[in-house]
Image 1 (cartoon, each protein chain N blue to C red):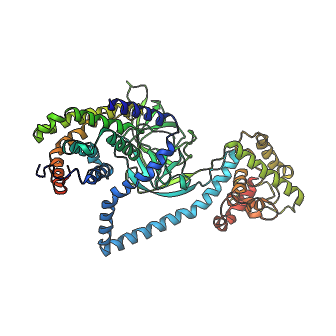
Image 2 (image 1 turned 135 degrees about the horizontal axis):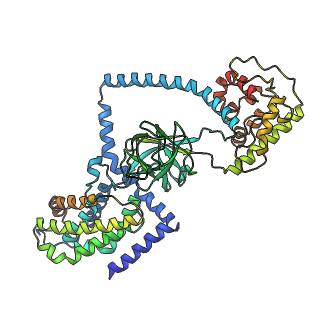
Length: 165
Length: 401
């Protein structure tokens, strides 16, 4: 990090702004053939901030954000909240190692984490009767993992610019 | 530890949300804050559309204008025929003793968002509780049924489309009335008919219309056209695939249908009341001078000199009396929605008019308004149709009595 502990945690608004922007992206209209592979923007951003500035983002906050996502998507309240909380839990338990990994390796770990999250999502969806007939539900996890290096780079650039940490 | 608490909390929330209504207000309030996201997310796209429209070329616009004019002309021609057809339809239905199919009220709404999950077919529209949208309300586009409202928020509502895997709709083949259930497949271009016997008379190109049997969708709206029928001797039922007529993934403007929400009992009571009032007035007015049936070339079996002015069941000429007597026994029983036909202005039309418009009962009064009395459709409908309908309508209706 370029800026070393000189400033206390500042620019926390940017964290929340980026998360809300991710929420926005997650409902942005996409052409039909791309909709199947819609990246998991919210988990991606949460993963980034957990690695970069964990003091801004805790499991409870993410859970609340998940509730907002539920209202937005029209899923039963708590579904996305639970899934996001699980993602945070997995990432926190991998936190120490994940920070040391090169980006492509982080990508691999995230692929697994997101895949598990999608699986939980699938189970919860099945309870309300929406079961996709194929394995396509894993596709977003793959797309998100492939996007991770780009997200990571762009977000690091932004957070250095704004000195978020 | 915290994960445990949150997990338990989420599960509890999910169960409560799925089973009870207690969280609905909270959801509604949150939704009010959050749904602008959909609007915001669409902005760039809309902006682009706006810009490209600004710069569309003049000759393109002219061409489009011409096309629209031609289309309007075609539609207007059809509309001209519609007046007489509706009239005829109401009359025939009257003979059949069934409730008249009346124009439902509709509300235009705009699509504001699509569910981000590609496996569920749900959309968000810009009308909500404040506009009178209710749970289970049918939604149409210009070409057919689209789906039903599944979640109502203060200013928005969520619509489940026909093709969602959790959606089914009772339909019938327009050609012969064969009933079936059309189930969503998760593909926006395809519906599947379940449990259609291998020998059933259904073939490629058949139009499927809603049958109204589920008590949720109004009857008679186009739903889909049959694309293929596969007879596989290994399968117990024929595999029937159909393409929805509505443009489920392309329509921007949708129609919310407000059908008559009175129960059949209420409708029957209203009809009976209107009937009684009309009878009373007819009795007071006495038998009006029997006017000869206005010479009516088109009147089919219109021979009986039925008196179009005063034709309560009791004093009608013999043949008509026989007919109305046959129809009448059902009248007192409240279970029959349109049980009191054949005598005065169509009961359902009159009853509806009575509910909708205080002026109507007097219009149904025989001596005052012969034209309206004779033409039930006109009685129930607006004055606009009145101007065109009476002339052709009055004569055959008189014959029917």
